[in-house]
Length: 212
Length: 137
Image 1 (cartoon, helix red, strand yellow):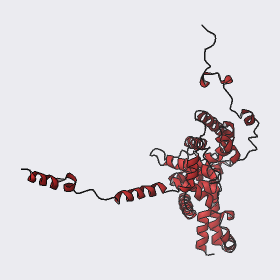
Image 2 (cartoon, one colour; image 1 turned 90 degrees about the vertical axis):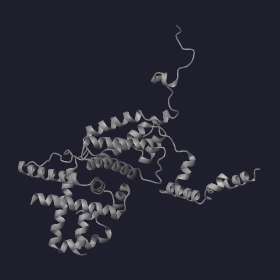
Image 3 (cartoon, one colour; image 1 turned 180 degrees about the vertical axis):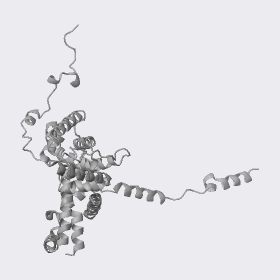
Image 4 (spheres, one colour; image 1 turned 180 degrees about the horizontal axis):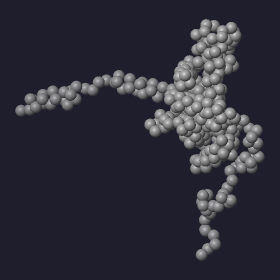
């Protein structure tokens, strides 16, 4: 049996250590990823640099996760939403034009829309108390009151329509301006104000009604 | 500023004056200063803000690390990003939302404006056929 094949192996048959490196492999390894801004990282990712995209993901995951968690109320759903949003960014990285849209706004929009779509599915309406964290109050009585208040709020939030939760997430949790939040939700600033107002009035009435 | 407008401001933007529209901020703060009723409404809005803020936990670092790892594995199965063809990239700014519907509408208009289908008699040539039959000896 001959030691070597009479023809060279196909690229995917070669051991990983013997596969050809990308043409710019040397420069890729020298890139200062933490210092690069989002547009630069996205440009490198568009050229196939997965490390640059991983750096970008590390920056945006926490914020997007909070948006998704506010809308879905379920950590597992929020994780899936964020992963799907980032995968869409990877697929469209080469087509993304920073001159036409801001990356942050684009990601907020995709994440919010994915989360809203998930909440519209029939079996996805039960919030599991993910928005009810441990209360740091040291006094047991104060802790109990705080926990009750958070439970009430979680129940009231669960009753809000997903779009109103998305408006709360972007405007209050993330502190986006009215124009930015409206752009992320594809509504007018006036419509966004309506969403916020209805959400707050509903929450206010529910909390006040429960406490009285 | 009237109290009703101030309440609406609180309902929309919350209790933080930094989030109020700049054009109305000074008037709203002045009203807040002189009205005890508005101060009570402001306190209630601030309590709701605080409750909302406390209701959303900071993401767990372990969960974030897990998400990042899962994303990296999912990305490894994806092909590399592909650039948009130059022609499409050039045409995209000229294709706003609704362009497809507009083109379809125009095509329908062109199709409907074509000459109508000929009458069945004319189409089948029946009068000509009958004339030929009558002319036969």
